[in-house]
Length: 378
Image (cartoon, rainbow, N blue to C red; front, side, top):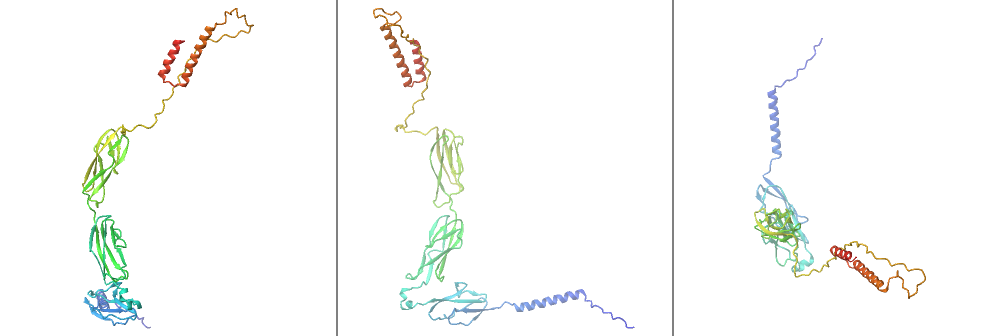
């Protein structure tokens, strides 16, 4: 009978396996290094944008590129070589491959016949390179264009941080808050530009002046304000206090309230240490000018009606219904003419007194005196 064939597995010792892996890793690293080995030379290509082609150049690392001859393009004037939107500086050291782009300006037939009608800008500079401002202060930057008779003088102004400062179309810069920003001006075609660094810092307050009403009444109020010096200093963290809060108080916004009569000294203090004082007087009422007549009519005092006791009068006797007696024989019951006249007079006086009481308002004291008089007469 045939014996079964037994296959033996090849056993590799562990140290040998590790050595093999290390060798493979080293070989792969060498291959990758050779593939991606940094070049000591860089290629410079030229995008002529329709102009006459230029052959690429090779330059060593950190070398400087020599400016080639200007390309030509029919109907156009060569402006310059640009890299990433900015004109390329040929004094720059080359550290990588570059593609330089040619920019052109179209030549009109009128420009060819008369250069005086269209004079291009050849230079642009600002009148200053750095300015320090305080918040909300402004300054005017001036752009100097060359030549002075350039046809187009349109410029663009921008700020690298508009939260710190901004610039308008005329170059006027306004500071907003503490910080640093760069104001850049450039021509419309972007060929020329210049910049100025704007630094915004707070100016400390060196003096305070309090303004407002110095006299108030009890229960009244007024608002005090402060002026600072120098004028470009920023007003911040003013602390108010009263020398006697029992006479007048003041809150954090400068509102003074009168509590009772007297005088107090109000003090304002800035965070930088500048102080100012102001005297406030509290009175019981607003003083009036004695020379000014009071034109407000005085209302009449309220009329107090005192009930008048009824006046007792003797009623007239009824007229007898019997036949008229003889004139020659007087009736003993009929009062004579003199008595009748006296009673009529007394009744008239009583009616006049009652009428005066109704038409002439009297004070309670006058009414009481009149009642006593009437009682004595009765």
